[in-house]
Length: 527
Image (cartoon, rainbow, N blue to C red; front, side, top):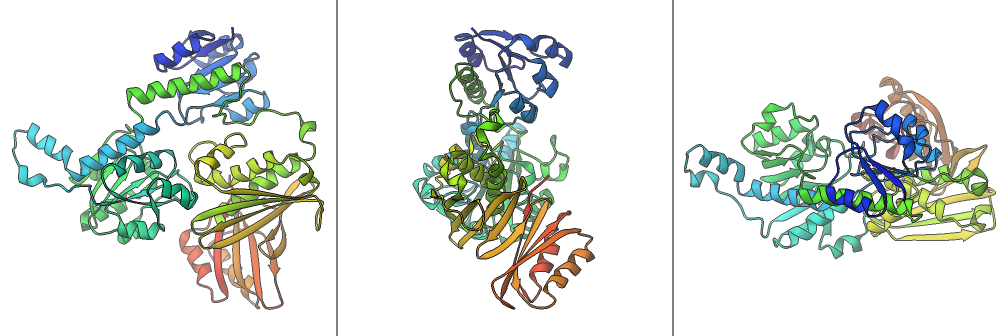
């Protein structure tokens, strides 16, 4: 039987499951040196967030086949080292989904009926029934921002309260939302129509402070806001100002930009309900997380595929001699489409031309999907779980193969169709580097080597390039390169500008306000 080390406290049910099929040692609270001294004896390792699975731990664990994380985050595990060593890393992303959804509902009801304030008043010896008049949630509009695992569970529960459900998530299909009884709206429409708003999006560059001063101003007067996702999704000062102005009637927060929270004025506000990050804190959630992680670990040790593998297994280079150079191409094509597409997602078509079209392209499809989903998904997205995540969102995916080559020996293109239209990107591999060679009808040659790419759809006329460059220079934004494609002399043109520095929203607005500019989009490729 394989040996498994449980290095952090997990639910007893998970340990019992492991013991049914392996020899299990539970040694929690070990120092790094103590872990290094024993890890060589084990085929499996189970941790939570306390134990750091470093490169040294992985290199020392000569027998290790799998590392299991009892939870969703894997920041404490060196994924690159594990992948290089052929060690699978698995997690438990669904075990606390229901707990987070139920906590959302609890906060919404507490907010609507003034439960915490009434509780404290009565505990203090007061009897002030009229001071705590509440509202019913029945027939109210609930705006759900993010229809992933938790948002979907919130929708299912809110239906039983006879609420009207509206949602904002550009990366789910309308059919998927319709099956949950959710009407998809733009973010601005959701803010204007919702009596209650709950946030369930990942934290990305585009969602940080998604509820700020501007968004508070768009709210339906008297709206109530709930956040059980990430504290940084809201600008705490903006919602405090909204409470003071009356634009917000109440706010319920389980998460904060800093934890423990530092904004005492917000925490102490009479219209704010707060809990100390309890979204996943249920006995059932901890049990489910332990069982889910244990199941994944045992599957790997039994030679079976684990549905929640968060790193790609090591594969010998010769196996992917043809496709390997096109994996980063596929990933960057998918990532750029996420940044450039607007409107509600409808479908994606992935096309392969030339030599790569003669092979099994499932890994290339997974790479496109991983690039597409990574900026909008909480947790790790990779070749293993990207197709699963795409299916969960109801994404309509079509593949096309054409073995005849035209401009390049092999090329990958992907077209995103949304409610606002469609956009196509194509790329190839040249000199072992990914190159973006086509954007819609514009032929270019871009090496995505900078942290930021600025896409400028403009009229081809004298001064266009200079005007953009002047604004960048005035704000100390360094330009690495510029590539221009055009359809006709003095016709429509596309500038793609590589930038070394971020572009603040106010500078993006300056670009957009140039007379010859039609549309400007910024893509953040990292790091």
